[in-house]
Image (tube, rainbow, N blue to C red; front, side, top):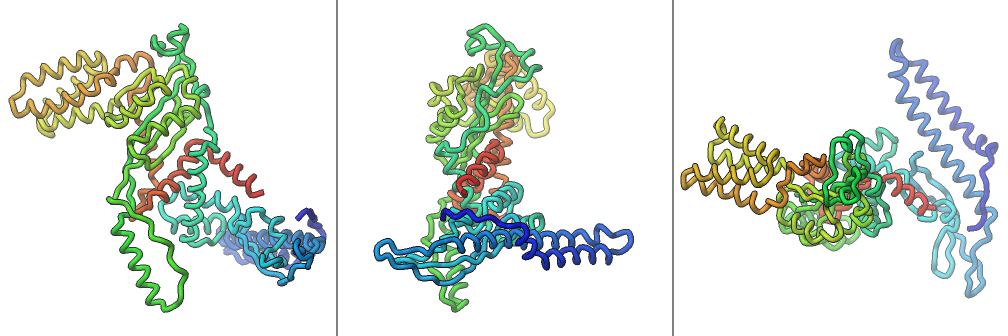
Length: 494
């Protein structure tokens, strides 16, 4: 529809005269009837509700005025083949849930050549959505902070006075999350920063020397930019095949008891083999964690490298002066980083000190006993040796200690020796400290918790695809892409 009518303020005032009087009367009555000392607390909710109803009525009246003006100037549709005028089916209602409340609009419905439509709908909303982008954004934002759709529905009604059922919110939020995940994977959503933006804080730059193999070391100057990449796995509760069959059985039983004819159920999606599925977190951050970029996926372990390389390319990872990765000791993570060596060109690959110490203390409890003070002293001394003197001195100290043990305890110590020996290329704590690099994978571990916070609510079980969709909204927010995405949705809605 090419007609662009306007809403006249004078006409709108006439339409809202009764609604305005009613609104002001309610506000005045609530304040007048408030008890002494409770004027605000007794009247604020009534006033809020009155103003919301008036704003809802004003928005609906303005939209209806413009629709009426457009239809008055609109020529009836004509069948292009026969030249006959389309059939007028009269005015029909359409309700749209907006941030200003639910508005019900009347527009004329036509049918031409067996196709029914309301031409003015394209003027109102080109996407013909029942829920506007603003409502979708509010629901998605609440989803990142709450752990059930029931609580999201309650908060949405309380804060925005919008009543949306938990089931409808589930569908709405999942749909948005799937769209976010698709745009993240396709690269349509750009990272909120580049590797060249990862500036090293002045205090950290003054303390650190540049490693010889880094860009800064080769050029003979202090490093200016530094970026970290972390990878980890985190378990997410999922729906098993048996649980799906049981749910479908209960649903069918309810339908039989209802006695009414119902719409056919969708095809049952395949469930998971076990109650948990390992999701993979890939996370990039700068020294001060001012910039973060993360993804969460259900990729298989041997496919994570593809995601690492793709996100590194989008961040221009190679343009940073220093590129470091600190991970736990999982062999699959090492393998994926090694396969991505050409695209990452890491200046340092380190083992997280917490995981190293965790294995040391596990051995200590087995050999010395859980509460033995001698064991605690030994573990602290060994950790300090690796931390300050490096792998060679620490490993030599560990072997010398093993020789003092009995045969049975030597076998227990061998597990720790093998763990450390297999990761010798990652045990370079003194070098990392010298160059001012972090020695802990805390940021990545924290992302595993925050990204799956919504997924691990009490009693939650997810389809794998829906879990990815829900988590995508969290990664969207934490990666600084929130405004970019909703601005894109707003532009598409037009």
